[in-house]
Amino acid sequence: MHEYPSDRVDLRSDTVTQPTADMRIAMQNALVGDDVLGDDPTVIELQNKISNMLGKEAALFVSSGTMSNAVAIRAHTNPGDEIITEETSHIYVYEAGGYAALSGCSVALVPGKLGIMIPDDVAIAIRKSDGSLGHFPNGSLVCVENTSNRGGGTCYPQEILDKIAKIAHDNDCQAHMDGARMFNAAVATGTDPARIVRDYDSISICLSKGLGAPVGSVLVGSKQFIAKAHRWRKMFGGGMRQAGILAAGGLFALDHHIDRMAEDHTRAHVLAERLNGNFGLSIDASTVQTNMVYADTERPAREVVEALGEQGVDIFDLRPNTIRLVTHLHITDEDIERTVAAFASI
Ligand SMILES: Cc1ncc(COP(=O)(O)O)c(C=O)c1O
Image (cartoon, rainbow, N blue to C red):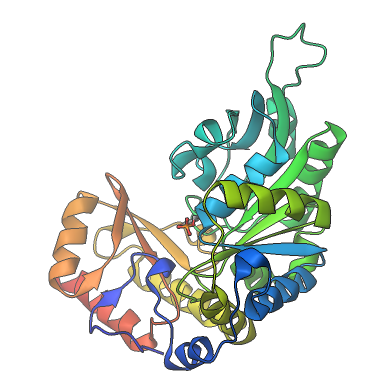
């Protein structure tokens, strides 16, 4: 569906999606209450729905994916602890060092291949204060990102996810999944979301990426964990009053926009096939697993972005010779054709 207030083809990110007409009606009609007082029925419905879908006890609606990760890290750790995460993870690269500023944690970075960590590398990266004569920080939280954004929208194989969670637990660490795009992984791998996250203590789901809601994320976990998270959300200024209007967009997305992500994935594959080896672009097809296409460019990536922009197609340059294109609910087959034609013309 194009349903976009512009005739540009915006492939910069799946965060650019706008609420569709039907989603807006659901938002407009949402019953609301004061969620800080705990009585917004639509927020409660969203939290219940997503915790059921993920097979966990409870959930908490928050304003963004960054807040969700920040609240999770704060609720799982103590100042002086260390989090363990992949070297290109959103938590490390793009969240303003929140783990340090808001939680007082250091970070142990784990190498990854296309954003995916190997369980043995995670085990090596976990440092415990106990037994180190007090030299080491206390590694207490392992974070995985599924799908991996900087990895190219790649999905963790289930056995790797399970092994990493086991390593975390065997080492007295909690396991957190930044599942901003976990539903893309579920659709792409044909796996039940509850199975994907089974061994994880907390999961952050973004409603405003491929799912297409305008605002919000949901942090999911045990009742005990969510009670702690609730307190940190309050302290971080994240308590929202009549938030049901926003939650209604999320509920609509969970009902209507999950299965259709398969279309985004198909279009990303088509785009990759059409571009690879042409127009000075090379793409490793094995990296195109969900809705993202990373391409290496012969010309400086910035130049490519500017030239395409003049043709009405917006993309991002991520490295000096790498561009990223992301499909989402407003990108049609026709938009893919326009994009290929734009590359041919620059
Ligand atoms: C993997 C991942 N985690 C977290 C976030 C943060 O989400 P937000 O922009 O809502 O803070 C993003 C945003 O792109 C992301 O890609």
